[in-house]
Image 1 (cartoon, rainbow, N blue to C red):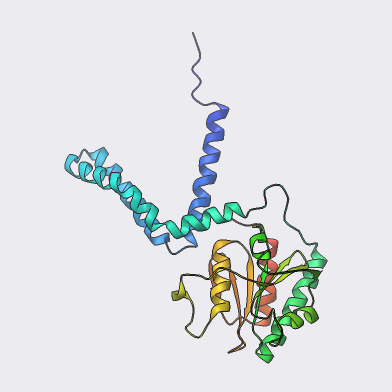
Image 2 (cartoon, rainbow, N blue to C red; image 1 turned 30 degrees about the vertical axis):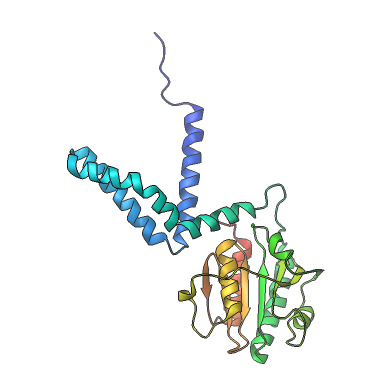
Length: 257
């Protein structure tokens, strides 16, 4: 008598792949404006299956027709999120691992960023600094002026000097090194999450944080307040201690996508 194998290694691989894909999809949408829409769609799907199981033919027929014509609508509703997701895949380090800082190197970098941000805050000098994590920022690096130097308070002060040619753009730091200045970042479309007093730098910080997993520091030249954008969110008016702690935690953790 033949043994019937209901569970094979292929089934296990499929389950792991599906779990990984669904988990990361939900984690991605949880950080976007479409999370409530996604929850509504999940509720409708559950209701649809309940109608099927209970044999409600009319309601089942209506829901089937709605789902058949809603595919295009879903692509339209989630267009910004799909664009962000594809951009994240396209900028992910595939063959090479991103720069990983040693503990002492990370401490030195944080100290330099902390001193720079506090100095800029006191003098009300505007600044926009992006720290690369898992997602490559090469496309944004290419939009600026290439630099290859250790990140330091003195160099950052020179770059963001209001009379300098590069102060309006963003600085990108990979590992412990400044690799480019005067870079152009994408502007967010979600102005609702930004205070009206915030301008282009904050929109650019949030835009980059929506499209990549970068950690972006912003100093307002109007108020001198320090903000930090990451994972599609921006946290405003943070203190020196909060800045150091958040940068350390964010650079040490792995990206969730």
